[in-house]
Every structure is written in structure tokens, then in C-alpha cells.
Amino acid sequence: MMRRLARPLRRLGAQEDGAAAVEFALLLPVLAALMVGVIQYGGMVFAYQQMHDGVDAGAVYVMRGGTDSTAIHDVALGAWPNKPSDAAVTVTQACTCAGGTADCSSTCADGSYPQTFTTISATGTYAGPLGSAQSMSATQIVRTQ
Image 1 (spheres, one colour):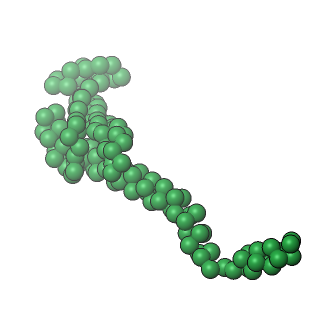
Image 2 (tube, helix red, strand yellow):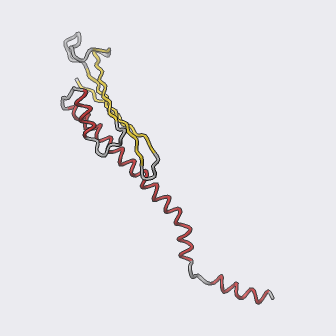
Image 3 (tube, one colour):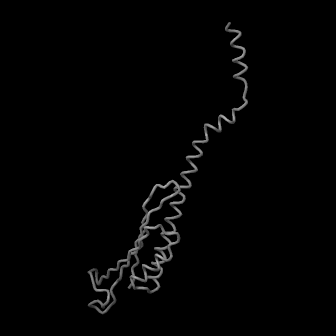
């Protein structure tokens, strides 16, 4: 009885038809998860780079002599392509004379111009193809005199 059952089982075990399909079925979930991760986080890296490009544009504007906070804000926001709906840019300026806080519109006691620190910050939320929201932020500080 055992011999009769063993022979067909041996033949069945020796067949390799469909082995590739089984291997593909086992690897498909891993490959799909990897692909979804690349799309989700690759898109987030791309969105972050675009936000950072906007902040950089505002910093370049300051380095070329721009001092108006509203104009800096508009340049940074305008240079940010594909902004999310909650995109926000903030610009703050602080001045120092000899290490102490000073008024940005007047000269220092020694007659020199105060050092101006312009901070440009951007925030936004990236919602990728999976719909999971990731908050992003970028900041650049420019020191001018």
C-alpha cells in the first residue's frame, strides 16, 4: 500500500511546473510594499526640496540687499512650487550692536550699522498618494550688515 502511494508522490515532488508563479506570489507583497514606500517617501523628499528652494530664494533676496519682510515673504512663497494648501512662510528680523539687541533702523553707538539676522521659516504638510500626512519645515538664517 505504501509503495503505491509513494510513487505518485515522488513524481509530484519532482515536477517544477508553476514554481516561478509560486515564487512570484511569495515576492509580490514585498515588492509592492517596497514600491509604495519609494513612491510615498520619494515624493516627500521631492516636496521638501521644493519648499527648501523657496526658503533659499528668500535668503538670496536678503543677501542681495532686500530688507522688507513682506517682500522676503512673497519671494520665498512665490519660489515654492507645488505648495501644499497649508503652506506658510514667516520672516523675522533682529538686529544687534556689539552683541546686544538694537533697533534695525538706526546706527550703533559707535556709528556702525547693526548686524541684521533675518530668519526665514517655511512649514507645510505633505499628503502623499497614501494620504498619510507628514509635516515639513525648513529654516534659513541670513546675517547681513
